Amino acid sequence: MKRLGLFPRVVIAIALGALLGMFMPEFMLRVLKTFNVLFAQCLKFVVPLLVLGLVTPAIANLGRGAGKMLAAVVGISYISTVCAGFFAFECSTHLFPHYLFAGDAQAAGEAAEAAVEPFFALKIPPVCDILTSLLLSFMLGIGIIFTKADVIKQGFDQFGEIIKLTIERAVIPLLPVYIFTMICEMSAGGKLALIMGTGLKVIVTGIGISIAFLFLQYVITGIVARRNPFRLMWNMVPAYLTGFSVCSSSVCIPVTLAGTLRNGATPEIANFTVPLCSTVHMCGSTIKLATTAVAVMYICGIEPDFTLFANFVFLQAISSVAAPGVMGGVLMASVGLLESVLGFSPEHSALLMTIYLALDGYGPACNVSGDAAVTLIIDSIFRRKKGVESQLAVEV
Image (cartoon, rainbow, N blue to C red):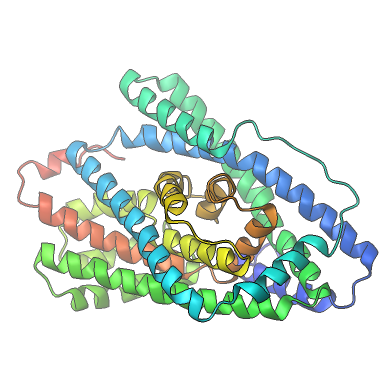
């Protein structure tokens, strides 16, 4: 089981939960519910620490990069990620009312909340809320850059490694169990078919939105770089399929780099930009998260509010820099924002996790394809500038 990736384990958890939930006695359902509640509390405790431990050194490291080119990559990546969130919001709010039905699904949400009571509920208050953690991370990261506080940076680097270890060895392995407990509860309440049908619609919609966003990205890139956008996209198909398969932007760096070079990027610029984009450019994961969040709002009877969602998108684009190197990092870093900004309950977050993790690949696939587009724009801006090689001499 340890050799299986997260996606197979989630599929197994969903299948077992759907089957066993129909026959499981109430005592066992209450045991699972108790674990569900405890895990949700632990998750709320860990997420602000994840943001603090990973975002702070990430911002500090960005300050040691290659000057103007670094600022351009980070700026364009942030704009792209924010635009991806708004694009997903607009598309999903126009599409979902045609085939997601809030009334029926609200009943499913109520069933998920009220079907089973835990034996006990232990409260684990987080050290701080997610917004405080984000602001503190930004302040510390910028402060480390300007004061050259290497000792403090080293401490946060080590703290980040501890948080990564906690996420990779404890939280991620237990996520399928968490999903299993929720699916069992839904199955016992007779509402699973509705939720699974909804999940399939959300996934198909998310894939379509991500591909549409990539098309727009490459149209803009083609105009800036004066190249055929369709040929640019075709050259990135291997990277897209690799990202879809391995569910990781970082693992895809060699394939993304090869496709970017086929598209005519300067090797020195591509070697700098592609690895950096795998850290700061999360357009696909943002589309996936935003689409799923809007879907959960609809099926739970929550009216999507543009102002709240705008706050969520701007903050999530910053917190997503905590994602690299952590499986499911974008999701983990965003759970606190879902609850503090969008007002999600733990049950809403659990439902979002189930749909989000049911097919993880299309988010990273869009990420890596978008990384190549950002690289080509950067290449068009900087390739004629003198001294590019000296700008790239410092590693990020």
